[in-house]
Structure formats: C-alpha cells, structure tokens
Image 1 (cartoon, rainbow, N blue to C red):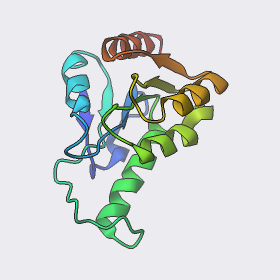
Image 2 (cartoon, rainbow, N blue to C red; image 1 turned 135 degrees about the vertical axis):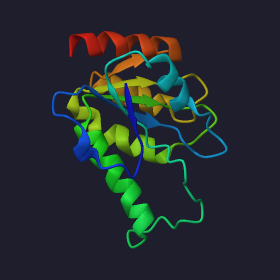
Image 3 (cartoon, rainbow, N blue to C red; image 1 turned 90 degrees about the vertical axis):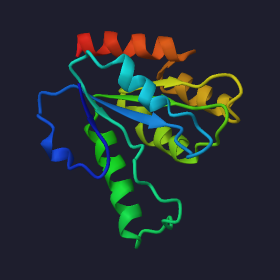
Image 4 (cartoon, rainbow, N blue to C red; image 1 turned 90 degrees about the horizontal axis):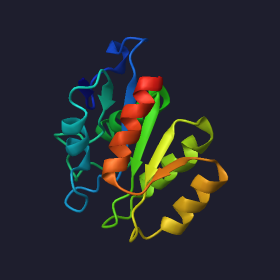
Length: 156
C-alpha cells in the first residue's frame, strides 16, 4: 500500500494503480483521525490511499482562493477525488463536515462512492436521501466500510 498526502504530486501514481480517496470528516480537533485507522487495516492491500489529512495544516490559513496553501490543498483534493477508483466518505457524528457534503454532491453521479454516515450526524437524513436517489452504496459502520473496500478492490 502507498499513502499519499498533500502536497504530494499525484502524477506519481501509476495508471494501473487502484486508488482510494479518504473523503469525509477531518475537522481538526473535532473529528477522530479515522483515516489513520483505514491506513492500518488496509496496510496489506495493493492500493494507493489518498489521505487529505495534511500533517502540517495550519488553521490560520484563510479559506481564500488567493491563499496559495489553501489553493494547493483544495486542488490536491479535487484532483485526488477525480483520480480515485473508489471514494470512501465517512461522516463523523461529532462534526458538520460541510466540505464532505459538497463532495458527496459533486461525485454522487460517478458510481465510485461508498458512504458511512452513522446515526447522530446532523444531516444524516440528507445524506441518506442523496445515497438513495443516486444509488450510492451505504454501510452502517467502520468495519463494514473496510470490508466493502477490500471486496471492491478485488473486483477492480
């Protein structure tokens, strides 16, 4: 397994690689680091994980298109989402995750999402409706999410 984080150049990914993007709750200090758990349990799989949880993120960076660090991060995420063969999307009940909700809408039509939205997420009803409407695979917990990724990768 390879793990790539921003600002790593995604052009280093071989075209034949199976790529999984870890989308979902990140909100520093609020969301658990569920991405690290995914990395650990998928360690033996032959996949490339794109983890947007940037190690050196600075909360003082302005969410502004002219801010070069912000622009670099968002561009990396959008490029990674587009390149991914599978997008894991996890909505932590302790978060609001507005960017993840945006990404759900952006990629709902692409038939490469698996969503885990546990009870307690403030917009679970909206997530459930989008998944139902666009036939997006939903799983109820983290263990089922990992199991689905392993099965999907074998099909790939």
